Length: 293
Image 1 (cartoon, rainbow, N blue to C red):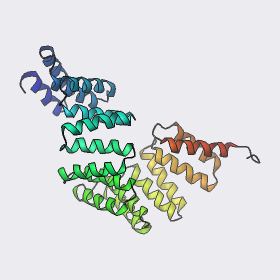
Image 2: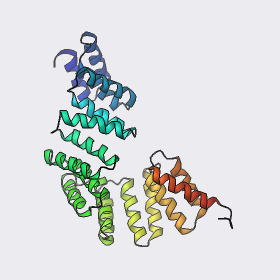
Image 3: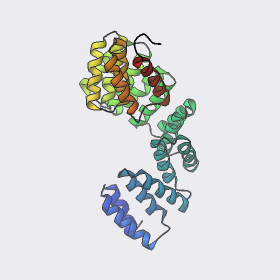
Image 4: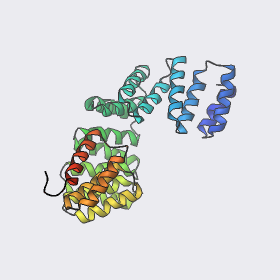
């Protein structure tokens, strides 16, 4: 790479997006079919959160150079983020055909497979990605999530331990470890792991959510409520925390507050359709006048 293309790529890598865009557009004025310039403009748009513009640019880059697997891989990520799982799976499979040994492509493809419920295929894709990049903590964590989806708790714990060896303060990996221990029925170990995580890393909402779930399983509903409130303080729009708190209040017989949190949950954009249906059904029951069924 030379000239404005090289300047644009260097500026992008230095997170100087305005300078990157300017240089890349100058290059395109002279080289209208430069797939790399269009691709990096797509990456810049992606960094800015301009998903629709990034999509158009990645499609354009791929049309200009059908071998540019990075454009397809990032396009797949954008489709996934938009909930367009089938489109994501299609382009990521194309990216894999072009770059079968790229761990990023494999990880993105595995994420799409998980979204489609292709558990076995997702595990195999993640395992290959981990084999290609064994020191990558996030990939080990992603593999653990795939194992967890199949309730293979011991395999998940093994991957999480490897992830935490690489990134000891990886809050989400700590949270997944707690969930896996609970999945095995090891509530005391799960509680210990949850408290250790809160002591050793900067917690995210998930750390308090998994703590609350362990506390509920141990019959400590009051402490669980406190943990969920801490989760919501960190992440007010966290759908899992909203639903867990609503169900906790519902089980306690606190109908008005349960209804309030169920309604907040339904306004959230994140819930799974099956959770939404279940909550709507429960709300109808709670709102029925006394004495009616």
